[in-house]
Amino acid sequence: MTKKQGLAELGEFGLIERIRRRVGEDSLLRLGIGDDCSVQAAGRDQDLLTSTDLLIEGVHFDLAWTAFDQLGAKSVAVNVSDIAAMGGTPRSLHLGLAIPPSLSIENLDRFIQGFLMAAQDYKAVLAGGDTCRSSGPLVIAVTVQGEVAPGRAVARSGARSGDLVFVSGWLGDSALALRQLQGGTRPGDALAQRFHCPQARALLGRRLGDSGLASAMIDISDGLVADLGHILEASRCGATLQLEAIPLSAPFREHLCRNPETIELALTGGEDYELLFTAASESERDIAILAAEVGLPLTRIGSLSKEKGLRVIQEDGGLYRYRQKGFNHFAT
Ligand code: ADP
Ligand code: MG
Image (cartoon, rainbow, N blue to C red):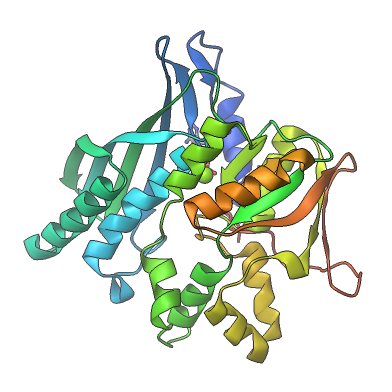
């Protein structure tokens, strides 16, 4: 008799695939399960983008080191980030809250204050939600909707062999801050900010969508290796990355000098919410212009190949071996 498969073997993405296989076609759905947002046809002028993200106490955040206003802002940013990853513009948010009765009104007010301020920054309105008691942890469920010109959503599946791989901003800061918090040290302000208050790259995402420059795109929530892996799988190609090209912030570099193994966090650490995208090699100049216009570095970190799999090349030409790929909710 074969052993029954458990969640640990199936993994987060095996479980999603198991659900996806049971879903039928829908004529208005341009893109269903498997990308940063679903895309629905919504008239002549726009397609509708929708995404949902959960934040659970004890899984995504620890109240021992989380301020409620920051938690509210982060709940918005991680959702808006998925709209940016499709090249769209956020419009509305729905907020589901499962609240343990011990939570104070003051802290709830702080949460809502942070949530609404972030929503305003991204020009998205809180349009509804659901509120109930939790018999366990605080659970925050946010749904974001946005829009994109018809047929212009940037999926994970559009990358082609020969395309270049770009990433916005800097990688690894959020994971480094989390590692320091877990180890009982206080991260410096800049690193702490990247973990507690990530910024969704909303303007960049929209501009990449409008310009048609990106052939495929995803936001980095689970780590560079894991999230590039989703693009490679959806686009059926492979990639080679240059380790020394990965953009690192000044505080990350400073820490790296003393702890060289920390480089792994830039590859596999989650929650940076930078945009990872591919583009035809002829677009490199336009991407440099866009970087200057949005005021954010857009760094070329590698290229795509027909040969499947992901290779990370060190400065000495050798293959860099990472221990884990990235975050998976059911990994043991
Ligand atoms: P992201 O990291 O961009 O938020 P996820 O990795 O959470 O995306 O999800 C991958 C894809 O699987 C998305 O298209 C998401 O909508 C879909 N998905 C995740 N969980 C479920 C579920 N329980 N039922 C249906 N679709 C799901
Ligand atoms: Mg995403």
